[in-house]
Image (spheres, rainbow, N blue to C red):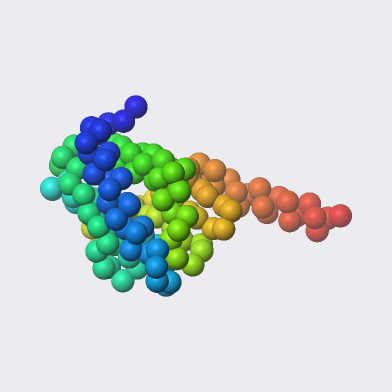
Length: 147
């Protein structure tokens, strides 16, 4: 269940669409799309690697939403919308070298969490899939070396 209104979801979808349309014609060197939420005014701004603003949206429900619960809620909402946009093909025509990511960043532009990772035929939306991956790979390599 969404914690933001349909109108706010539509604003965020429009910002993502606006961002993606900028990369349809010319090849880009972008490797990450940074999503920053300003807690004092609820504005979500999407930046490229060079901190150029690509688009933004005003999400009224995110005004003064801070702390761990606020970040988790915001992360979940953006991740769900990115997933929907991925399924609709929003990212298919982007002329951006793969792999690239959509990440949620703090006020200092430091990564809070990876929201979406895209690489050729691989799409990772839920970071839960990555938890324990290092251990599994290490165990696999150890088993191969033992044989």
